[in-house]
Length: 357
Image (cartoon, rainbow, N blue to C red; front, side):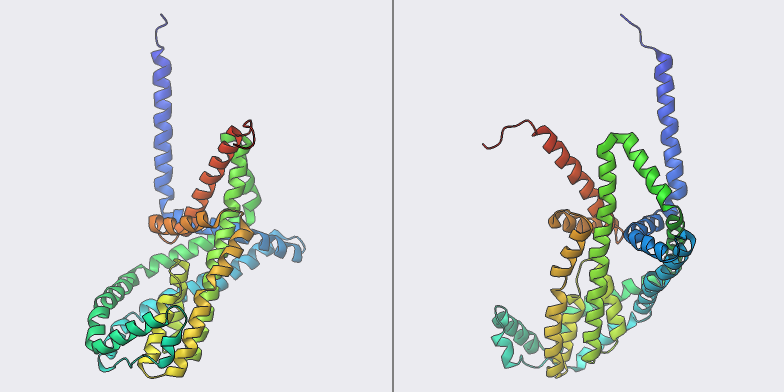
């Protein structure tokens, strides 16, 4: 019987241990940069076709195209997001002020036309009448705890504005580097995937890039469109602090909660103040804006990656819960990779099976 080679076992054990230590050390060093790296990768993968188009317009100069894309990134993404966060946090105290102002108001009875709204009219009219009957004290007792928690959360985030700004700047810097060396980085990732798992892994890597692009188009563009249109509706109907509410809408839409959490209370506030015409206009506009994602988001996601919509939606929601806002992009990519591998395995196993039952 052959005796085990203890020297080989010791060598293999020490090699694996050193590799594990190296991986942990590298992760610890890069940990502060991981969120910015994930965001920058998502942005660069999504906008890479735009970079190539800009480069073609600028006589094939990658440096000029990178400069244009970096400036555009600052103007279109970073600065608006920063203004939105700052605006929300600076006006957090208005949440409690609004709740206090409702104490002196009373919700009028529902207009007669509410009863005639198809499908939801009777239930909406009944609920409205119950709220109006309860009076301001009943409504405030329900709203106050939630408004206090929301206001406290916004105030707590004020101390994180410096960290958010640093992450934004790191995202821009890393994006500029990836724009410059993106071809080399992509080729290296594909070679690594091919070395790791052959041709199938390379296909999965390409699909991951398409999934990132599709989700970014579907989530971000839809959030921008809904918040922009919702903000127009708030401004036209005379709702106060329309800019602040638009910023809140963008955050809610990006988190897949929708603009209804802002628009529906705004409609109620207008009717509460007897602005029936403005409330009716905003109500119709709310229905249009909230239903926009049912058309726009699937179209944009399918344009970026041919994946089941249910899988993408589960990835967005699950990733958001598991990893925070950056999970919006991580979740669909992970599910897309797993779905592709499972599909390829099933198709290979069933290739020799006869057709039919």
